Structures are given as structure tokens and as C-alpha cells.
Image (cartoon, rainbow, N blue to C red; front, side, top):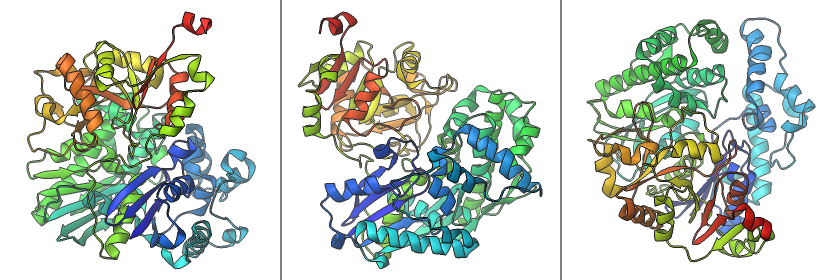
Length: 602
């Protein structure tokens, strides 16, 4: 059985389900080079069809995550094109007058599309006929769905009845539950995000693979408030929420509490739902008024505190009403590793699982699982997230012959993990491209920048040479499973393979890996590396441990600031050539930047 799952909204992606398991998944941004690409994922699907030699008649179903989609947002690819300035201007010129009952431009975004070329895209699979403008509400949404089905049918050469739509939040929970290699019975699955198919929070009881919806609401404001605070602080919503989370630990608790109090009446927990209390009509203007007297770090800490308190109260109520102690969390808010840490630490929680990159990019996997279960087919869990394209060996061979490589870089072939470990142990930073690209927002070793986590000033060095990260942002840690208990406080034995949870660290060996932790509260967002998930990466860290005694590496994503994680060797070389990096490993080939004198002689 072959099912292609897609998500075509913010951070679009596609996944291939084949005979019981997810064999491929990738975000469209990795192929277009534009972060958080928002579109029908044509390039990802073209890669799937070519790589797996799939013909139209082989496809049992094209499953779409999300029942409805606003056509103007998708037509202009709003959330992948909008800048911070665009978002603020939209708040002031469109939402402020609209929400205050004043006259406003009903076609604000449509006019942007018509007048600015950056919003117009020639490679779109979907069509956007003028007739859609004459419709509104559900009628417009349903007509756009008919158009989408027709366009997908034409693009793939499959009948329209093989194209089906599935509920947004159901896809989230199917991803969270079926990806889990250590399912518990029964389990509570819950989702929280900004919005999808008229809901932003759900609670499910899952027993014997049967899903019972216990509660849902469209009034859970956790994600929307967090997103709005991100913009208020001058950062890009739908992308930089993690920066707010990273900034939060620096503030004093008493200052954070005052900001949290400002938010306390927006929402309330009612049983197993978060609902409106005294929600202001315009959240952005509310924040401009209330937060202008608070410093930026206190605002970040306050919204994080409010999030944690509200979500903890929700989870407490869920346990009180169900008695269940095992949880699966999915949706955009599950990307907040600090929140996940707090929730997992509750006394009534025995197990708490969050799969990697549980925001909307994972919906393509969730919908593939959901479509498979609708056909009563098996759904194998995800033991790893190395689901993207592998390194193109033939392409690398030809690439290494090019003058841009030969003139500026020394090419060392047959490089071993022991060789790379020695370079890392000597204090150098190495970019690594090996095996299949990881799926999701977090680099897991195969498209990563690596360094000794015990080296003094390595964070500053990486930031200056390539990452340009905000000074307060922590890096992550890849740690061998055999060292995890020495470094990480994880008394419940929670799974920690995808950097989806934060943990406290143990003090005894902290200096060995401090650069891979949050510098203020010493927490860590670990990738516990196992030999079965990634034997080559495991071997590299083992070799590093043999040289240094440290069973971990600092790990951050291989990309230039503002660009997606690299997909292939050419994108990786672009990073090398436009940064201060000196070493790029592509499988067993190491590119070493020549010194200026050597380059000139060449």
C-alpha cells in the first residue's frame, strides 16, 4: 500500500507511507531553499516519485492534512514571505481597525498579492480563479477544496477520488501516538496549537488503537498569545517562538510573575478545556499597552510562566478526570521543550512522549498514519527521523572536480570517524553531511555543525563564524546512550532521541558538556544517540569519547542564518564558502579550507 501524506500550509511537507511504515518525509523548504515554505509540496513529491519509482497507478491515496485552507494566504504564501515589518503593518493597518469596529480594507492581503511580485509564484500547482472572490465562508472553502483536488489529480495523474482531506488535530495526535515506539495502554493524547480546522486544543483517550475524543475547544489561546508576544518582541511569528523560550530563563521570577499576571485573565482552565475568560479582541494592541513598562526578558519569562502554569493546570485536570498516567503531546505548543519538561515532571505522570518536530510540518506523517488506519493497515513507529534524501554519491564525485572546490579547499578522501574525532578534540568545528537528511526542525547529526561541548568559548566561535544567533540562545547536545545517565537527570526514563524535551543536567560532569546546554539554568535539550538509529554518528561520538572522555558533542543545525537546514552537498558547500567554517565532512570526504597563501599560490 502506498499513501502520500502532505501538508500544504506553513512549513509544508510530504511523507511516503509504504506497506506499514513511513519510509520518507521531508519539508518543502529543503528543496526550495526558502525557510518555512508554504505551498503544495511539489518538489518533495517529485523527489518521492522519482526516488521510489512510483507510478500514478501505484498511489492508493494522496492524503491532505487539514480539511480547509484560506486560499488567499496560500496563494501569496503569506507565512513564508511575510517579514516582521509585514506582520506589524498587518496588525496596525488591518487587524487594529477591524477588531476595533472601524472601517478597514477587507482585501488587505489580496491587494498585497496583486501589487507586489514577491507574493506571486510561478511554480504553484494550485489554481486560484477569480471566481473564488465571489464566494465567502464555507462555500469558498469547499470550492477551493474542489480546485485543489482537481489540480492534484492533474499533477499526479490520479483520479480525484484518491485525494482526501483529514482533520488537522486528528492528524497531530495520530503523529504523536503512532510515532511512539513505546506505546502505553491506555494513553492520553492531547494537542495544543494556534488553530486548525476550527480547533486549537483536543484531549483523547487512546486504548487498543481506539481514539475517543474527550474534549476539544477553539478558545485555547496559549499558542496565539505566545505567537503574538514573539511579534511584540520584534521577532518573526511562526518561526522565532523558540527564541522567546530561550530568553525566558534569564529574567527574575518576581518580574516574570508580574507579566504573567497581566495575562492571567485572558483564559481559564475549565475541566479538560482551556477557554476564554476576559480575552481582549486585539491581543497585539493589548500587549503594546500592558507590556510597554516591562523589559524584554521579563516579557519573555512572563509568557513562558503563564504558558507553563495554564498547561500544568490543564494536565492536572485531565489526570483527575481520567486517572491515566501516560501522555502523548503533539501540535505546535509541543515544540516548547521547557513546557514539556514541566509537564513531564508532574507527580501523576509516568510517561510523557513528544515526537520530534511535532509542529505542523509533522502533519504529513500524521495524515499518512491516519489514512492508513482508515484502511485498517499497520502503522510502525518512528525509531529515528532520518527520513529525507541521502547524500548523492555520484553528485559528490562530480562536484569535487569543480574549480570552486579545488582552488580553495584541500580534499581529503577516506576520512574515518577517528580522524574527525581528532579534529574535534583539537578544538575545531566540523560541519557534517552524512546519510539521510533528518526530518524536522532539529538537526540530529546528519546535517549538523559539531564541536567539543567542553571547549571554552565554542558558542561564541560558532556564532561569529556562521550562526549569527542571538546571544541568549543555547545550543543542543548529542549524547551517547551509554553516557546519558551520567549527564542528564531523567528519573522517569523518558525517551529523548529527538531534542523534544528539556531536562536538568547533573553537576558532576557538567564542565565536559556545558556548551551544549542553556548557559543560565543549565538545562539541556538532548539527542540521546543510539547505535541502531544512527551507527555512523554513534561511532563518531564514541571515537570522540575515547580521545576526550566526553560522550557527547555540541550539535547545531547546518545552515546560514535565515535559511533552512541544508539538504545536499551543494547547499552544505554554500554554507562552508559563505561562513568562517574551515571543515566540511561529506560522508568520508573532508573539505579543509586552504590558508590564504595556499589559495593565492593555487
